Length: 391
Ligand code: PMP
Image (cartoon, rainbow, N blue to C red; front, side, top):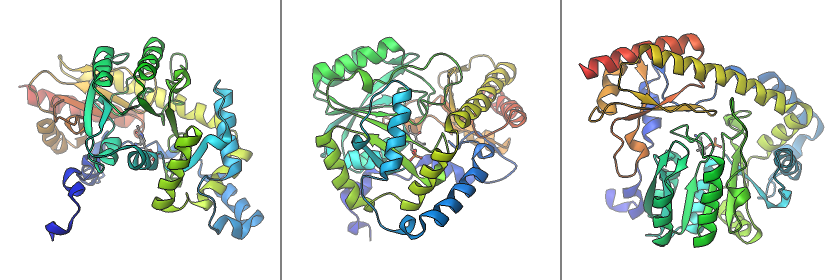
């Protein structure tokens, strides 16, 4: 059978995280592995009400096929929310997608030929690496520093003929790192100077619990750039609703690729989300999420200070859902994972986020999906596992 698969299948693997999630299904394991929002914050009753209203008021049209571009009312709301944050976006430049993950797939289809150079952050978002890999590009990685990408590496990659740069400038998955204002400007300047296409993925930007909101890199770009957003982290991922903002020429190509993929995003999901947004205060809801995740992040940082042995360093994210830890040199997070599972705690080892398989001594910890008591117990267990490794 193996001779029947397309060549591209040889280069793409099952998501390592999805595999880990199977191991962590054991309810005794405290898992910091997944990238799940806190389900206590899902607006269940408001969505229940919105869906009943949708079926009562628009009935069968919510169940009909619809346009690829997406629900016009929903796109208008997305544009309005950008406007409130200081970014002018034409609703007609917004394409509603089936999660923001779909954008990565359709972008790869639209832009990547085999061997094209794609610049990504190191470490980088696994879902993008997986989506792009199907189109067999050459990944070029730039190191992520505390305030964004290393600019010399970025310029060298651009000079060397990069076609596009994919980045998560706000509270990146997996590292939690955010670009400083200065680096946002400098990255945009380099993109423009070298004519590199930019894909800014921003599912976490609204989840800031300290510091000031910063403008997107997209807002500084004069050349071709795309801005991706998602309802997964500010409302609920189950709707599978995301969007991308793109210029006219690119937009039309994305529409074609999306049509081939799924014709359009679920009409029901869009109608319910639109109704929810029209009849509820999403900003108040996002504040609630920010406040809760802020507390959970504080608890994790504090417990790491208390329970982790000397020599482990962490990022201190100002938002998002992840924190990144670096173990002493030569300590393998994969080996630590086996010990930690026995101690009933889980995380994601860092190396899958590096296309070159480096980052052996790094790991990702999710703080959005556990309350403070579980964070304390889980970090205590993990501290013990690390101490066992370092013995
Ligand atoms: N981009 C990044 C950086 C992510 O972390 C995620 C979710 N893990 C996605 C895109 C996809 O999110 P969704 O498809 O739920 O919008």
